[in-house]
Structures are given as C-alpha cells and as structure tokens.
Image 1: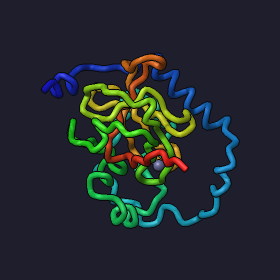
Image 2: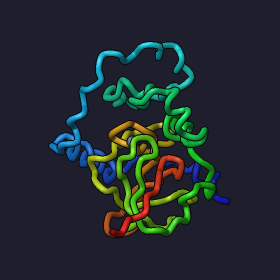
Image 3: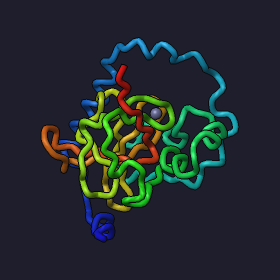
Image 4: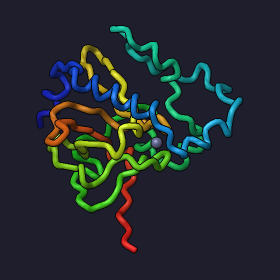
Length: 205
Ligand SMILES: [Zn+2]
C-alpha cells in the first residue's frame, strides 16, 4: 500500500499540464460543433434554493487564479434531486461532490473490453478503450481523451497538494485528475474514477 506516499507527496502542476489545460480551453472555444444548439433552451431559473446549503465546501484559493470559476460551488447544471435518484450514492458523491472512490475498488480499474467510456451524468463520450492502460494506481487510467473540448481542467490546491482536476465540460461532473506521468504518445495520465464513467461496448452492426 503506497497510498500514503501518494497522498503526502508534494506535487506541483507542471508546465506540461498547464499547457494541456490551455489546449482544452482553446479546443472548446474554437469548437463550432452543432451540438451546442440546445444551449439556452432552459434559462432564467437558476439560483433558486441553492444558497446557504453548500457552505461546507470551501475551495482553498491560496495562490490566486480562482477567479475564473465563480460558480464552482454548484457543480452541475442538473437538478440535484433528479441526480440523487438517478445515480447511486457513490456516483453522486464522486461526480457532484468531488469525491474519490477507494483505490482498486472501481468497476473499471481492470476493465478490458473495447468501447467508449461516457460521462455517467450526461452521457458525453469521454474516453476510448484504445487509450486505456494499466497504470497500477488503483483507478482507471487513460492517456488521452476523445476530444480536448470534452473536458475542463482546473487547478486545485488542497493543503499544498496541487493537482489538475478533470471535469466533464458538458455537465461539470468531477471525473478525476490528470498527471504528466502517462505513457506515450501523450505522456499524460487521466486518472478517472470508475463512478464517473459509464462504459458502452462498441456495437457491431
Ligand atoms: Zn457530463
């Protein structure tokens, strides 16, 4: 068990990961995919009943640079109650409250089937089995995403432990973290909770 080591080791976000974050943001901003069409269909009712309940979550903003995401306390565009019904408690905790499943406990740690891993909340296709590899970390690992525009990377600083959080761009579900110790060709490791994912087998027609 080297989890302790893993947790206490001081890590800083490398230039490589910062570059990746910029690339993800750029991919999103430059994207003119037609699936943006539904945006704006529902408007006007946000904010009601959300105040005063979320105070337990404090985001440490020591180093500055937190100003870019004022809405980080409400992670999802989905209705809380609906999500609590639809997701199991672990899925809810991981995706909506930035939880982490226990190492080696997740369904997809050793999953080898060919297919696509979707966001468990909104169904966005995030990772392919082709980029999945065994990182021995205890969580599913991928060296690439299906499209950089599909995820949002966000710097996180918890008591000196700096990491880059990975979220689903579409629904803001917490997925896991990204590190720069992955294999070729990218050298990137997306370390993702099984709870955040919904695997779909390739269907052959
Ligand atoms: Zn999503």
